Length: 537
Image (cartoon, rainbow, N blue to C red; front, top):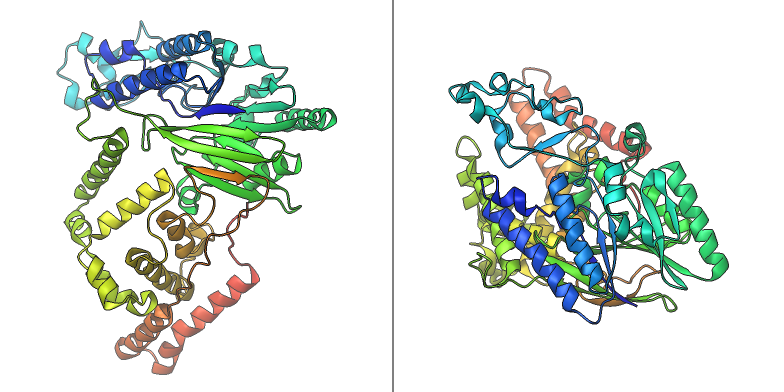
């Protein structure tokens, strides 16, 4: 069976864009991309089913939901089956209204985010900051729009959800559909009816939802059907960097992955990260779950997935389809992908320029040659390889690695100078972190080493993230054995610090010289007794 998977459409209504007086070129482009993708899907004769895995709108306002539901109905009327999930951008438990664009910057507080907010009888003049106190009372009113709550979404997207379901878990806004007699899909929503339940089980699904999933999987086994799932937040982290930078609420923990794998689920499509990624988890019982993360259609990279699934052989063919720009789109670059890459890099450069005390200039101008002496022994670059990258800016390397992480299948293979340099530098940092006796940085990094964080940002050593044909119910073989990079930088640094301490300390030279080594050994013993290990998926 062939179908399309979209995610994170972040739709913004036409009324929001053109009636606010604060038209944003970025948001206009994203609005146009949504319309373009839906028209492209309508025209395709090789796809009869479209899944969208959440974050349908950007702010959860009613206007955007109504307009997007109308767009989905048009797609459905063209002959496509449409199944959607809603996620954290689509609803609010506490807010009554959302403000449009930069309006919140004017106000000391935002009472319109509470359900009890009285829109008509509020004194907005008293809410503005001193900077805007001179404005007339009418100009102090924020441009706000009413927002949807989870129950609202369960109704508004009913034609693209439970109306097609053969079973639902209403408390978790989740449902199951039969695509074919022996091919079923679980649409697992992030929303829960109860606010407390959402917070208590934010890193997993509710007990009632698990009970419902177990019943569906048991029924499928009895009837000989294959079941896959769609959800919003990934069940397996795409890369360690995402796990470290995310939150528990936005990252399912390994319990979810292992539980669903042991229930018989082996394939999941997710979104949220805006990454193109294929990742695998394996439960302690040896059951494998493949998590295919779909990028956003209107952020980096602007793309969706075309999937061909063969349940009998557990084979998956998947292709990332880039959104093509139209002449009407105000984009200078040749493609939308290039536009969003440049937009991302420009945003990060501006962030660096804002750093205080001239740090931005240092960060932006630092080059490989400035750091290479620290990792020369570990990286082992030849003279020719070093000359090739010596003048390369570190900012450019980090931006390329971050773009790799988002777009998938990075270009820095182990035989490239950048790979060797970055892994050598990572080995130095790991050595220092392991050796320093004080703050447990390993805990901050969730047990991952710097090398484990950096390597998948440089190159994908498993199943291709973009175009691939593979069996999804077993762990893939590595394409190559990654080279080992080692460094004694931490030991050398501790020795230098010990010598310096002896020279400048008024205390006994013997006590001073032993202080750092002893503290290091104590820390190593502590780590041996209770090691900090990354969560296993």
